[in-house]
Amino acid sequence: MRSLSSGGHTLLARAIDAVGRSGLSSQLYLKIDKDPPTISWTSPSWNPSYVRFFNMQDWYFPLSGSVHDGESGFASVEVMLDGGPDLPFGGWQSANIDYAARTWGLDYQIPLNVVDLDPVPNPSGPYTLSLRTTDNVGNSIIVTNPSRG
Figure (cartoon, rainbow, N blue to C red):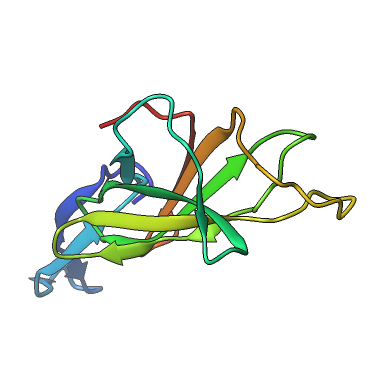
């Protein structure tokens, strides 16, 4: 079974008894998924992009994109913006998924301070974008600085 490719397969077994009589089993349809989903981001479409200030307390960065998995379907999409040691680091944050449209979206929340808890009055700067998606059988992929798709 390890040599089977992703996709649909039909399994059929033959049994032979001690005197040589044989019979076939019922067909069993298997769907194998060895491949991770694919993910891309589509918004924002301008470059450079800027973080936004919301309700006098929170900085956020709106992102959206598409996700696809041809076999088991996708289960999750997570986003991380890493500004390095001088900018806030919000860790992995779960995106909202529209399963029918195969799209995701997130207002990425940027912390108001870095590790030393000193306030960051404006978190503008270069960030590394990473996207992580997992399908329904656990195949996962992380894409860093993906091209817009």
